[in-house]
Image 1 (cartoon, helix red, strand yellow):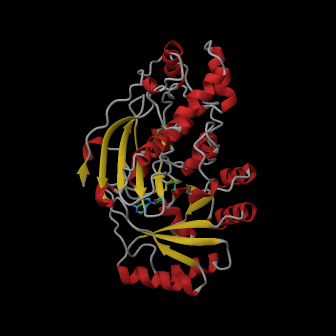
Image 2 (cartoon, helix red, strand yellow):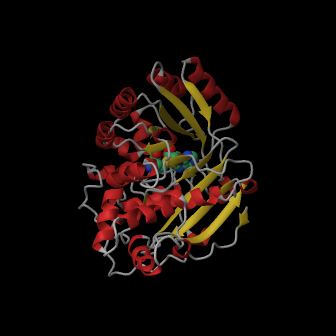
Image 3 (cartoon, rainbow, N blue to C red):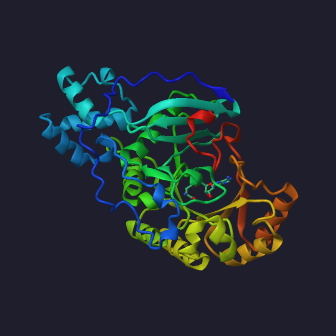
Length: 404
Ligand code: SAH
């Protein structure tokens, strides 16, 4: 593990103040009602934390033009700002020389407030994996992870500060939910790392960030409106957005059925990942507490409908936990549930989390699990454990500054 030097502060960053307009939270329209209390066991930890100031990435291009006009600027300045931020990955006002200095200060202060302050940047795998800890304007901490491969560059983003889903094997789930991230707070994690990748900072990887996985902190479908908005911003062509392919975006969920149904109607071709972790309700009720609300059969039915509508294969996430969910009979049951479906299984060797009583399945057990799934005709891969040594692997993101 290497601690990288702190990145310099962003020149464009006026400190967020209480006077700045807050991003409209749309009441709680961004959240999905969970119904029974036990479906969000950490709900008590939730409080109405302040949302960040408005940022250009919260808005589509038309709304940016309106916002610039309201600030007394010519609407085409919105296109220029957008080209800098999304097209050139520039956020330093001094580099925006096509905008007259007076306009520049006013517009960047109003539309490019600093949302993410890097607190710590860690790297491993010879620099190919990097984890950033960010402080948000209200002091909340979140993390994102950048992973370089020979053929692609992937960023794993957080959608919430903390998480309310309380899965007992996941570090993020232990502390509860602090608040939803705004659309721009999500997009900015990607834009930041897109710039890092564009500098050729990842050895042996392309210089273009291509893939985004919503597998960092939080339950993306519990922050539905902002996450979908972020997907639209990430996939809109520049200067409206980052111009990524929808197919290169993966939204991972514990299985909030009403939100999955809503996602079907959006008509997106993003990949949906379902964190299943057990094929039977008895065990899944414990490992993924939201299962007490939406059972295995119900959630699988919802993801099959998403697959049928989008034509996209569902990614079934399954953490291999020794003597908990790794028995041969569970492999057979999982195989029977998935056989003939548009799905593939991603087995994740359990990553260690502080205080957890569980550990990863032994390799022979894992191999037998894989063999049985494949025998049932189910495509199965074992995920690499990228970022383990920097606590950047699945389920290890806890944003505890003291641990770093
Ligand atoms: N809340 C969403 C997004 C988080 S994705 C979801 O649960 O899908 C993070 C993935 O890592 C999920 O599949 C999660 O179940 C898995 N995970 C959590 N803790 C883990 C751990 N300790 N080891 C391996 N995988 C873990």
